[in-house]
Length: 60
Image 1 (cartoon, helix red, strand yellow):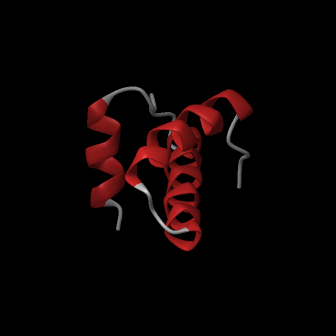
Image 2: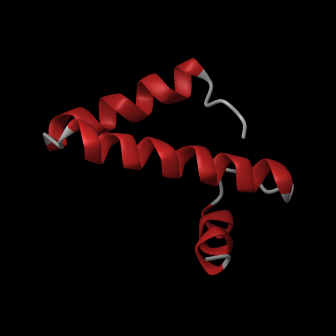
């Protein structure tokens, strides 16, 4: 599985922080971010486009 770039992870964590989520729940969100980025890498999808999110959801 690919590693989330530090800048992306920092931005993602900044988005999660105001939601006051438990550490366990934050861990789940980070796991699914890694799954999504791995999916985009494996299937040559642009992670910045919303249609790749729809394709990722359909894969499960």
